[in-house]
Length: 65
Image 1 (cartoon, rainbow, N blue to C red):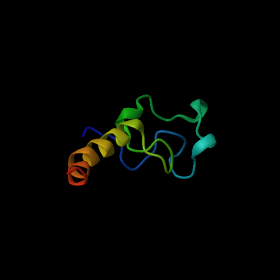
Image 2: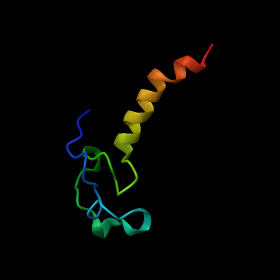
Image 3: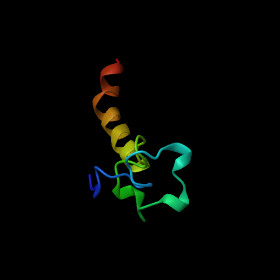
Image 4: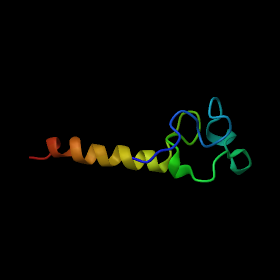
């Protein structure tokens, strides 16, 4: 999929920061698309895109008659 960082978040230390605690001042990455997580709990848009594509390919076909 092309992620370079899967264990560390893009914002802050990636261990405890989330939501409002993550801001432009605390960013640790220059390209969030290379990270799975934006902060300690939220995936990046790139990770959500992968999840959505997998869902579309593997789940939705089973819900449609």
